[in-house]
Image 1 (spheres, rainbow over the protein chains, first blue to last red):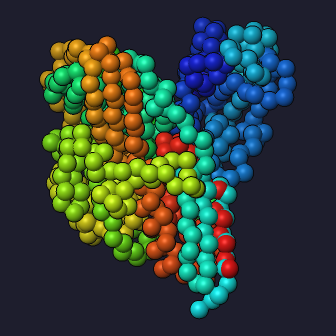
Image 2 (image 1 turned 90 degrees about the vertical axis):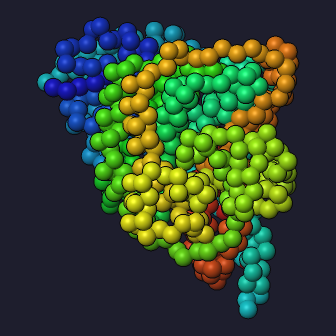
Image 3 (image 1 turned 30 degrees about the vertical axis):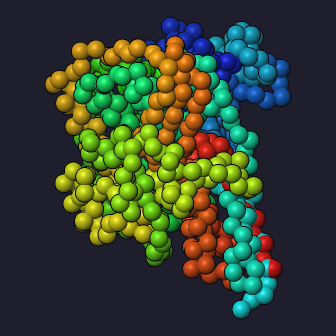
Length: 144
Length: 433
């Protein structure tokens, strides 16, 4: 099995949550699952998904739930911007829509997004989400 | 002649970097108003830089743009290096050039494949293009990833890289990484050759416009940096004298400055570089251009897309060659020291979208007193409006508003405007009366 756990984010603020989560989960991953942190990859995310059997993406999210809420999403759950965005704004949803069209997405792909609300740092949302996040990642990679 | 007045309003121009708007008025069969409206508030970056030390500035200016941070870093670093009397040894200048090639590759690959190409296949965006031409989009993604990796080799990461400093780099790249990337760059050359052939065969409208071109003159070859500017009407002036020739001015409809070169709108960017310096490209790249039948200099702004493809091809082979040279003769140190001083430093480089000029006034500790940055999109704004006047008139002002809007957006897209740099961009209003 070729599989990756990918944290998406940037070096500062709550957006670092995906990287933190992957760094903490990396020692506990099953054999054959590669941890990877990507800095605002945009469409370049697809290069890291091509050819995989399964992949789990962890990202920070800002929605309407309480900080620490875990969203379990599949690519079809994500809606793209109504107008084609500039590449400055090509986000996860647009990159995955492009990947689906190009048939570059792994057959099993899960997006785990942690609500950060208006928090400035990732610590508190990640602590709240941790048990559910850890269980979701373990279940995703251990399921036959 | 029609006496109708038609107002066309494009409230958000799609597939450009940033947000802006376009307002056109057709009156009595003539275009009486062409406003490329940049409405994003000024970002005040030049004020943020005041009081900061040169190495902080090199990291801060990388934040101006997520697509062309290396250009901002190189222009800033060169300004301080000139002021502090730092001469980069050949080995370090070579590494700067390689990193810059990475930025051209990733920025041009994104623009050609994700922003411009959908226009030529009659689809709305890259996701739809992926449905009808998946291999075209995949090629763009592969090339973009290669460019990103070149930037990350020196900058630690491809978005807002942090590896550069005044006098060179914080550290030298690992030889094994350089060797691996050089081989991958060479392996991508056939794909880049195909890209140039494909781009030159796109169904471009015939256009012939009169515009002066401005680019740096680079002693190392096809221009990336340099201490002199050259124009297509035969002028040559030092980077220090840029302000004597390029005058910025405000217009009511844009929060970004417009600029004139000696009193005229002008072009910077890949087509300007190619028009002025195609003879300095290596022989295989020139042969490829000849094969496509592209006649240079070109007066057709649509050929900017071909110019970007040519620059990708050139940047791949240039970066591979320089990485191989670096492995044989690496610099001994990652950077050269200089002595901060009071004065004024000037730096310029050829960003993917064109000449990017910086000026810094410093105090005796080298801290910034005043900064001035003239980005390429601001310089091209007036040229874009001129192009719109000519192109839409040739296209036919009696065309339906939706066709005019689509054509106008395509014309603007040829310039790959980065409104985030200029400040931000596009929302078309067309009024017909």
